[in-house]
Length: 318
Image (cartoon, rainbow, N blue to C red):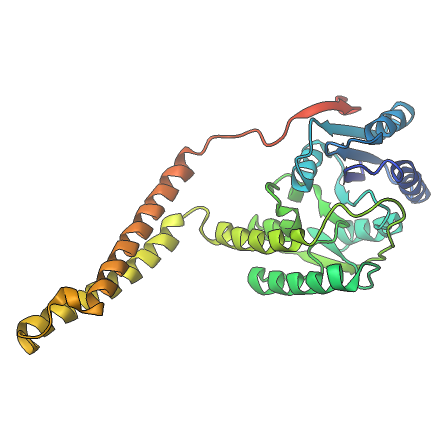
C-alpha cells in the first residue's frame, strides 16, 4: 500500500464527508493505493455515524473510536499502530489542511528519501493575536531547544516513512514534537514543505491559548526526556554534586575562620554562611535521592494502557 492517511478528529461531523471526497479524488487521480484511518477522539456529535457510513461504502475508510476524549497524541498513536502504508500522512479533519499537498509530500519521502516531512503554514488565516504571534514564539523556542530547524512544529500536515511511525512513541501531548521524537529515535533526515493553509469552514477551533502554555511545558519535558530519560542520575547527580560542593566549601571556610582566623568572633550559627552551607548540602542530598528514585522508577516502570478503544471499522483484515 502506498499511503495511509491518519486523521484524528473531535466533533467534526460537518467536514468528514467533504474531506473524504477531497482525499479520494487526489488519491485516485494519482493512482495511489491508500487507506484513510479516522480516529474519533470521543466525539459527542454524529462524527462516528458518518465514519461508519463511509466505511460501509468504501473499504479504504477505516475507523477507530475512543471511549472518551484522550487527546490528539493518543489518537495519532492509535492510528500509527494500525497504519500499513509505505508513507503515512497525518492531517486535521477541519479542512484547514489541503489534501492536494499529499502527492508532493509522498514524493519527498519516496524520491527524496526524507524520513519525515513537516508542513509549514507560511501564510495563515488564523487570528494574529491569539494564534499567529504565540505560534511564532513557540516555534522559535522549539527550534532553539530541540535543534530541529523547522518553522512550524504544530502543523498537522506531515508525511513519514512507515518505519518512523513504528519506532516512535507519541504520548501525553507530544504530537507537537513528533519531529524531535523522530530525531531522538535516529531519524535525522527531516524536511519541510510550505503548505497551503485554509480558513476554517465549519465549527470552531478545539484549541485555545492554553495549548501554548502546555506546549512550552511539554517542550521542557521532552528536552529532559531526550537528554536524561535513560539516565536521570546524570542530571540530578550533577546538580547534587554542585550543591554539595558549595555547601562543603562554605563549611570549610567557616571552620578555618573560626579555628585559625577569628576564634573569638561570632558563633558559627550566627553567620549567614552557615545557613547557606546547610541549605545547599540538604538540597544536594535531595537531588541525589531524586536521581536514585528516577533510576529505580525507570527500571521498574510497567506498561500502561493510555486509551480505551470502543470500536473499530475495517481494521481486522490481513
